[in-house]
Length: 133
Image (cartoon, rainbow, N blue to C red; front, side, top):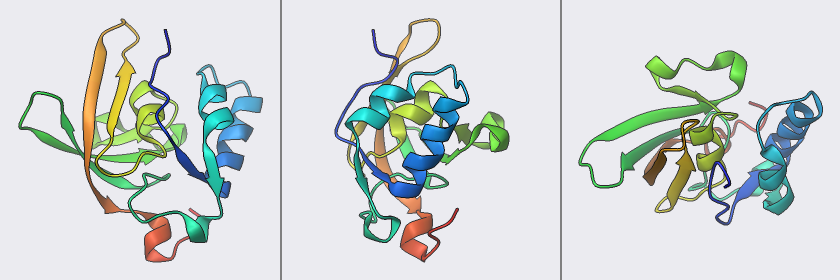
């Protein structure tokens, strides 16, 4: 069972290179599947509605009216209680590269399935002209 669903994904070249580096350093999560199947584009060409690293995304859990703001980050910057979610977590891997309107699906470490809709992208570094974050 995959820990996240392999929907169509778009990664920036920079995000791809950094995740590949984490993979080669022995990241204990299955980033291989994401890196192998994602469409990779130059940072300046990523659509403004795609979740990239350090994007702030508004998600809504399936069957709930509650929405949460999450910021996708690298492991050293993760603070889940503050909404900073590591890209190497199941939810981080599920969100990266998805466009607004998509459903992110993953399984928690205990096997519990989760689904959230990407409701809005509140901030994307590339859309604001930051191509190096």
